[in-house]
Image (cartoon, rainbow, N blue to C red; front, side, top):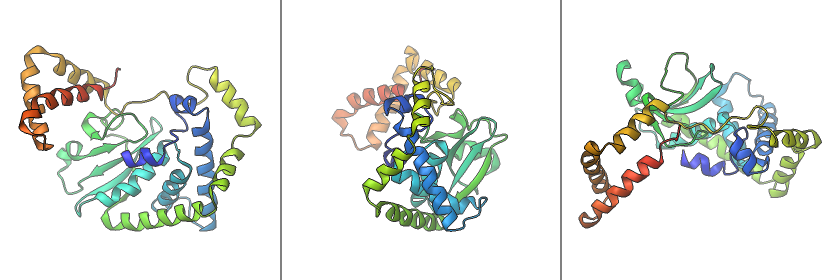
Length: 271
């Protein structure tokens, strides 16, 4: 997930904070990435419904142009996380049509159905926050209506990564000037006028406010637990164990435990 955010360093093309922070460049880069992807898919005659074949094109284009919406973030995570899969694991490209959002999930297909939500890890690089269990995630908590568009295992993921890396090399071989030209071509008069309108609206035209990956109710429960005086000793004890597992020397664990608790609190959304 962090790798995806680093590759797509110019941000999200449809989230208000990123659009404004980059003066709309994240939007133009996202559009340039999609134009490039479509060109390469048509050249390779990839069928529109061959989603497994299309994912490397999306990941490569987003990586080259450094931006994307939730779809590009999901493709990039799905393709590149596959290198970390154990033989019994899969990474899924998941969509929630009811809310118009997508994300990646790490799954263990052989796990019992009743345990899936506790064994499924949501990796939503587009949203704010870390990787979390599906049962704690804002969009993934309600499993009804979710769809898997594609999935990779360790073997098929390797093929996808090779395809994506080949496309990245092809795009970059044209040089940075060509990348810049493509981005600028998306920033025409109409696009700049739309950007001006965006700047005077609370969240822009069709833009999302930044979403946190964690479910709000879960976040509030955890905040209450962290703030409760009666639970403080137990929480610090758990944090000391975490520090121990991280290899912190015994004499430094108490201080590090406090920082771990503070970091956990900082990861929770305000709302």
